[in-house]
Length: 397
Ligand code: SAH
Image (tube, rainbow, N blue to C red; front, side, top):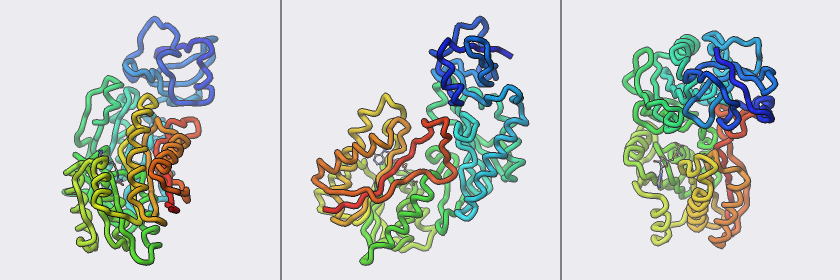
């Protein structure tokens, strides 16, 4: 077991139980710990700060497992953390059979993401520390959930920063022929092997449901535009909610194939749905040229600003799509607009949208704010985990 000391004055974040320490805070050491090894972390005066995993290639050099000196970081520790996280998802059972069971740092398990889709667990090991405990974690998850299979999707870009190669494949059990989930009254097929991320965006569950409700509020029936539709999440919610028409746009042909299949799994009149493969930035302008107008528009783009350094370029992208979204909205219409960029604060996002409204010569009000659903908590000690924010705007004029 190696001991790592922190430079003088750099212990504050650890004392506040922030789970990360950056390379610049580490005092010189004589022996380099192994990748992912648990180390004892001390402040410069030798006082205990916590137990953390060593990430030699990442700027985030240490990720804390625990700030309790008495705690042992072993298989039982991980089993207990997993049990705590799984227990906290029980209240979501009524929402269907899919949930994020483990949400990384915010569940006290830095680098670990676990999504349950019915009988199947999809797991991402995203840091050198969690990588070391891979088999203990899979064993604990299989026994605690009774799942039929666990599948690994450790193919996210962040692994590269950790010096880890991507890895995809079966971890345990046997995969069913297909993975179908129920979310409230809607069925979706999830492509766990090749879909984006772990296959589905569970974080938007409550917001999809809310869109279904909002559509019902238009007495004459709503014309809906869903940009960045992926496998049709918001589109199906709007169709089920009684929309008159739903136009869905995504640049991924695979996503649209999956979206159409999802529509067919539900009792939905296909003539109300139109699916378009296009770049949303261009297509929004085209819709203007065609004179199309909508009652409800959803903009849920990919993260344009993965970190704070991308914020400026991202700001231009958000401003652009929201400008066009507001232009395409009928007076009295609703815009549900999201950012899932960790580097974009709620405050800045709201300012950008205000800029969009200004440039679109639109007057708009915020009538609701969106957050991720209950299974995507944000630890108070880890504000970086607050990635998904959304605004519901009403265009007054
Ligand atoms: N709202 C969806 C998730 C959206 S994920 C849900 O509830 O499931 C973001 C989507 O944006 C992805 O499907 C991706 O293929 C798509 N995308 C990325 N860049 C795009 C672009 N320039 N134009 C259109 N779609 C794009």
